[in-house]
Image 1 (cartoon, rainbow, N blue to C red):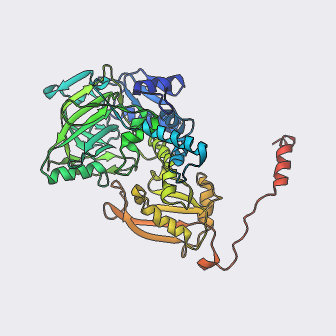
Image 2: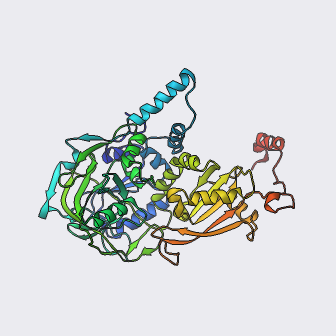
Length: 485
């Protein structure tokens, strides 16, 4: 078993969750229209297990859901005890120091071996092509797609991993976008303005070409996570998945489009987008907690559907937090900390609260060294790839635990003079943001909750925070049982 990769297939992950007491099978008939959504939402908010619905009343296969709803299951999905382990591995790889002596050379070789396992591996035969439907036999109703909320525009497939290539460079992109089922063989592609697939489609339309697309549903958990990761455009998601797994991802050529997909996916949809074609997509109850409006989006025409024998359909529920995407967002937060530090070395730690749906608020701790250091960090974050979508940044001192929201609130409420310590600006916001007065851009705020310096105009002498003497703390610890408390 390779380090960090215990599950070659989604079914293997489900078996592992079952053994760990993290999976509950529902044998009763359940409706994918609204009923599954209500069951899952209650389960997530109770801190409950992953769910496998064996008998959905629509579709021809079981539904697996809430696989990533806790940090424990997310760590299991990535084959680690703690999500911070992966961040530490990345941190070691991006260290700039050159090896010194034999131990350094050995360490460097170990790092190279990790990277050697990263590129995907092409195979000729794949489980995802055991059953093949073409042409008129393609029927999306075979899949138990979900209607999650009463106001949704219909059935959506919410965990379809979408594959495209740049029409000129051939650069592959893997992304996760919601897919509205328009008919038995067409889907609405809700890829947002900031996404790489949107750029691929724009180039294809400029050239007057169809854009080939392949969608994989029910991939192994590492590949599924990699599709959600906010990687720069020049980093291949399957290279990243191979690094996380410690083993190359097996890929197979599609049957009707010039793309490759994970060989162990449960279901694959192959098709193309016609240049210039759009259909209304939505409404959709999104992770913001509000319905996103109807907008025109490209249409995928599916010419081929392949799948494993006895496949399992994987999906996710979207709603205001808490919801299953908490586990995915927390994994991204921990895994990408070393890379964020590499771009912004001032950062000690950061937290993206789930209640802010991970981009509305970022809490950052720094080791403050000079006047307006906090404001420098705010601007650096707004210039760091998809962190640019952050709306509120709260900067605290390094002795504040950014994951302790009570402590952060204490600093933000008590350490701030709002006439001096708030930075207001404008910039890009998430496509789904409903609060901005203009779509795609809006106002942002940074709050400097650090200790203030004389050079920043604070001349009162920053007060000392109260702490109990260590001797008294130790004495009370030792005698605690005597107090009967």
